[in-house]
Length: 174
Length: 185
Image (cartoon, rainbow over the protein chains, first blue to last red):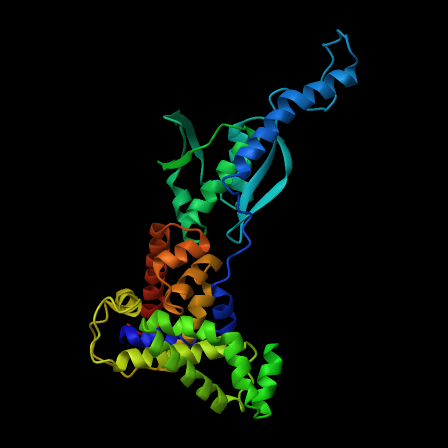
């Protein structure tokens, strides 16, 4: 067989596949402008709007700070939307209440259909880069999942949950 | 004009069919041909030959996806013209590079030359492409059907060139495995 034979055979692929091959998928592409704007909006909401709403609901001058928050959200929980891959496009979950980055990471693994054999070993931070060290079984998923999209989905999840943090994330494998 | 209406013109043997085809798909076919031949004049001739072949083929064909029907004709004509050229030197468009890459899929084929069942090979390739994840499929077809450059593919899908090359390399390895399993190597 010669390369020309392969070339000719590829020429006979189904019309429907050829017709759509050059179409860009509808990614929920997060433009570089949208993320910082979303971060600013999240900060405004967190530090300005929510306290104002909270104070106005409780009444000016009230000193009864011993009551638990009326939202039902226990301290330490983070309200987070998980970004994950579905058919190699980024999809989003409903909002979840999760207590820690480790729990968020576990939820992210589950939504991506990644088995429990992939475990988070540690999270480290140096020189502006957050490294998620995981078991090397994650690499086997790169045959069917776009590795950079997968990382992007994790990074976006964490940036939304913790604005201005997790701007540069990496995977390491052990 | 909708594809069904253009195809109907072919069936009615109305010469307007060619004009409508050229208006709607002339640029598309020209791009396919130019990517292979790197010559606007040669591409123009191939596109004109495409219209002639389409006129001869319809009827009896009634293509459901007219763009791809025409694109396949153009691609075949352009590749045949490229092969007939006396000098097959590097740098003449993407085709030499594409053939070098596809050669990797059969690089272990040191056995004696056997008569190739081309129809079966096409079926195997078609099944293989269908089995690929969507983005791998698109990148593979953009490279080996449309012969887009790695740079063009990267810009189209917002991938780095390195990522496109890695994806193609991985897909070629899978293809080699499939070809070996099916007894072509």
